[in-house]
Image (tube, rainbow, N blue to C red):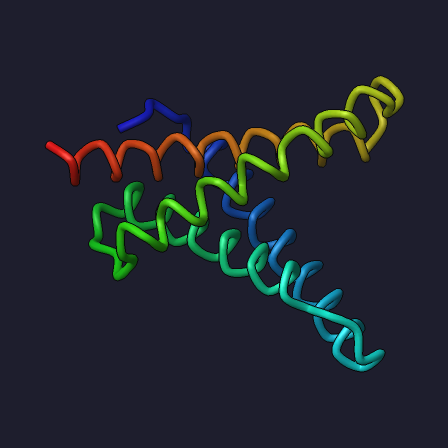
Length: 124
């Protein structure tokens, strides 16, 4: 288990919940427009899995995800990071956007790491 402060836990949960809400809104808009939603659906499921894993670890509860679910979520979340990091690097120092991006990056990194820990545990 990763050593994380209570503040980091709160911020990470909040950040992932925000990402989920934004992705759900995008999915809804794309569905209305009749465009392909496959990628957005996969991202949404990966974000939900990441949130669930963090909550289950931090609350010492079990989760319902299969190894395939976890592997898929890990790959998708890893794929989201570079784009967010690029936006972060272009953001203005001290801006609210930069703070939100820092939290989003941290929450994704934590989710990816905990998913990896679960996968490693399943192997052993």
